[in-house]
Length: 155
Image (cartoon, helix red, strand yellow):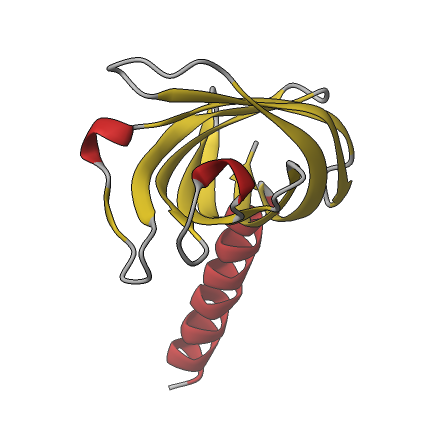
């Protein structure tokens, strides 16, 4: 009986050490950022949206840029007289982290798009590594862009 108790204790310690070692390479990612949104000319493929002069803070800080595309050919009504469209692209941080994002951006309310604000919800995954999570994007009528990323990165 004593050998059984020692064996069970040893197995429990090994399992704890293995779980701790596995989790050691995983880091939580919580980042907030602000940038200026610059919309490019739209074509049949979509409307490009560049985020410039981005500054991130949180578990990743520093400069970032993004190249996103609104797939306007696949737009759908937002229920308030405006539109929603699929959103895809990449966010690059100065610290060698690139995220691929994919989701939807919706106009807040209705009316002309040029004076509208937008809210986007996406998922992201780490390019050239492991990890992912969720992201929110907001853009006001003055083209001020805000993002929040919540997820994890494994090195």
